[in-house]
Amino acid sequence: MSSEQGDIEVTKERATVKPPGLYKVLLLNDDYTPMEFVVIVLNKFFAMTSEQATQVMMKVHREGVGVCGVFAKDVATTKVDLVSDFSRQYQHPLQCTMEEA
Ligand code: TYC
Image 1: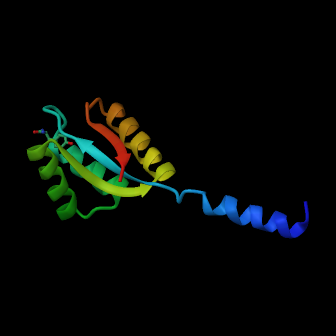
Image 2: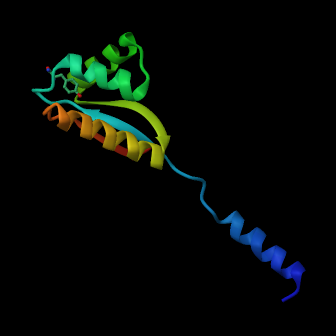
């Protein structure tokens, strides 16, 4: 194969590579986790102000689910793990999950 053909092949491969997907990190409502704890989580792991965190927490409380942010897959996975570990550490049943944006 000539180098010219090689270059064409490489271009074709690159054209079929998908851009990295984005993922929504979600918090789910439950009846036991204190509201103050959810606000701390949103402030600590998602860099929200108290006002933003309170708004998102109340949305989850009223509607059952809410978006904490949208991130690349590896960042979203890390955030889900950090929130889940933190909630477990304080023995709260808070559920954090992710879905493709
Ligand atoms: N529903 C909880 C309560 O009344 C508060 C809460 C809000 C829990 C958001 C989880 O993701 C959540 N204490």
